[in-house]
Image (cartoon, rainbow over all chains, first blue to last red; front, side, top):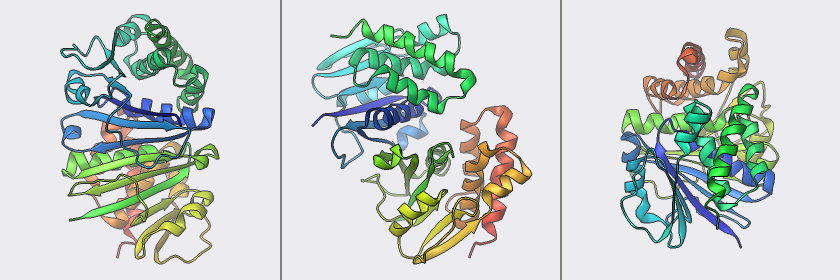
Length: 181
Length: 181
């Protein structure tokens, strides 16, 4: 059985939860897998931190929270400090180099990408940063087909903004693919 | 310890997940409680059904999925058929009378409200239907203060749309309050 446990973390307003929902929906609706997506809010949320857990599996998922993610995305320094210790050994840690300075060694593949910088330079709209992150994640890990994720994006995004979202996704896809191994 | 378990159900596009996230954020950020909010996607999601679980508690929450909700909201006939059997005895079942025809007796307070009809008549924009549902739920159950939920709405909604969202919330609040006991 194939099972991928992910944690997306950042601050409110970065679109972390939306990205998580889109990824889960892509897996379920366009690739026929099972998925859970959850937020557990506590003290961290009051400080402005956001964490969303996603599990994608071809089998049953009994518990929707992730303790040791295979894939961890950190989009703020605070998120990196809080969550980098929980990564599963051998996992993948993706950070944005505008928001996170990686300061510690983790037993994982550590990838820093200029996602925010690229979005601002090529598109100029921070609102699609989260979609660029999704693109980078798919480019890097190939956990789902790019077209599945874009179909799920299209289900959620107003039609007039679809081109911009497509572009952000593709920019991320290219950034991520360079580090694929 | 106070703990409220809720399930919001409907179809994709009705804003069920967004309403769930707003409610959880209101509880955590504006009332200092703990909350979890989760989606578990399976076969039902592929059919277009959406279900979101929310738990609000003043204590720790160990398991984010809800088996027997105290409060169940069903916004489509399919959601009603699927989920009405799981309501906790003595709980509250809220349905919209445009989308759901209640066909069975449940051991719960059953409230049918014209939320969609009211939104369409007074505002004319279906996009704020979910916010009207939130208002109705708060009017009916008083689980959170109205101003906490509106503050969480304001955190998520673009400024230009805030007046419309406020209006939808207040319309729901009044509808729900009539059935408060």
